[in-house]
Image (cartoon, rainbow, N blue to C red; front, side, top):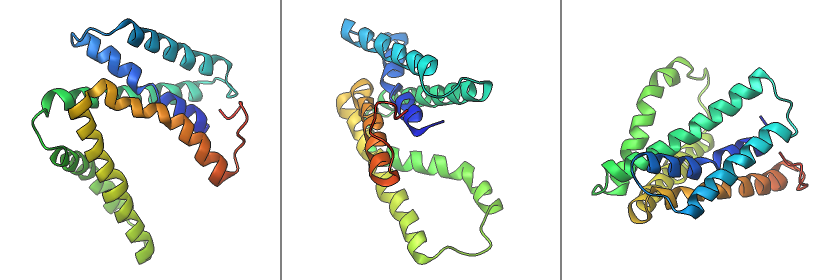
Length: 179
């Protein structure tokens, strides 16, 4: 899947969050429902008329990305409902630990024959602690203060930054056919 497709499909998180909130009994405004409809129409348009030829493999990738976005939405709703009074830093730590533990056997099994350099290990620590851990703490704070539906709208920025980083670091075109 091209990065542009992945970025656009990731931006469906707010739409799934509105749908899940509605299923939980939260009444959505007309503008939210219009946003959901337009968003899913955009995803359908991308799938139908995009630059990638549709195949079983591409269809599975689309489905997997949409399930991932649905999972993000479900998690945002669950955090809002179940961890209202919990410090967001504690929720972020639990999230990081809960995501790390199941991966430990895989890490041990695929351990490299040669240890990476200290610069590489330091970069991994910075990515894990600052770029992921701190980002999660801020995300969970946003959920706590603004609610899940507003907090996940940050994913609308993913396609913009995918385009920007692709152009800056990979030499990708800024043309309309970036997907």
